[in-house]
Length: 143
Image (cartoon, rainbow, N blue to C red; front, side, top):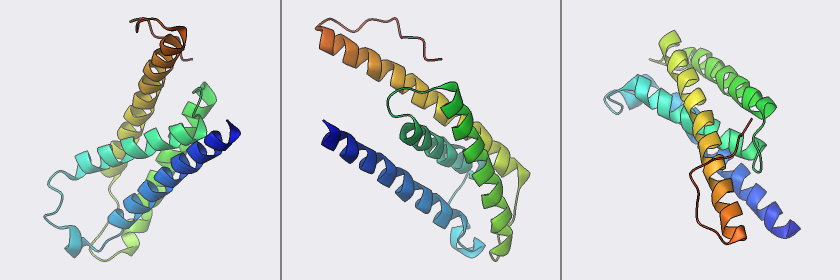
């Protein structure tokens, strides 16, 4: 059992690291490489940080989300978003935009919410499977 948990942790951390490296790389390409590639910049920021927050929450709380993990996940995501925006000023033809940071923060909130919802349904599904009953529509209280 412990071996499977270790492998699962390794997979979660690897997915987060790969995703985070991809986001960092894509946001630090010179402006001439990304012009015309993304039609809706704010939606790209929103979706990118929703995915980052989801994976970060999954790594920090794979078995049960808590208020602390939710707050830490959100703070890490928005702090990284601010640092990401500020370091883009060092890249040719790129700049910082407070509205991008707002989209990052909103995406982070939705990513955390999506993780909590998926955790509730996954835990309900597993508990019902182990109990041998049908899936019920009453999710457990997360917080």
